[in-house]
Length: 204
Image (tube, rainbow, N blue to C red; front, top):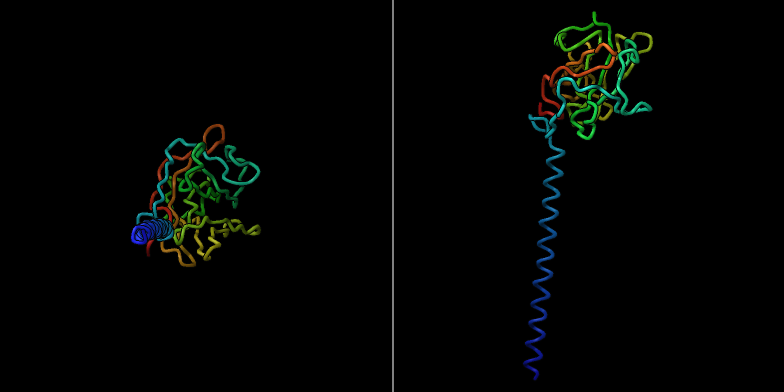
């Protein structure tokens, strides 16, 4: 009787140990998988860190923030020196689609801006910083609108919107990618091209 009881206890202990071991292995595997996913998101790559835009020519621009969220952007709503964050209508669920739409004096544009992708002083760039992927902001100079600029407040990368969003300060390795825009007859603004370069965080 004692031997049977002992054997029963041994089998129960073995089963318990196997169960606990299985739980530990499953937990480790889950944690490892989560870590890999996190690293994939945080690690920049030359292909844009997984950012893939779904913007197509003809998509209308809508406000991405503020009281007018989701409304079509009218050209008359922006003065020279103004900028807004925008999405293509119906495609705001993809964070790779966010752009910064800016209105400048057309005469202020210079290389490497693609002038053919601008219209009536409007120019648009990816709003995703090429450093670590934060959204950029607009810094407006009220006294001198032509000296306004785009900045990423995460690590203070600064871009010149009149000169192809080239990097003029901070750690960003490359400019923000330009995308074509055009003002239509009813004053709504539409995209006319894909991005001219990679979007999202890049390796230097």
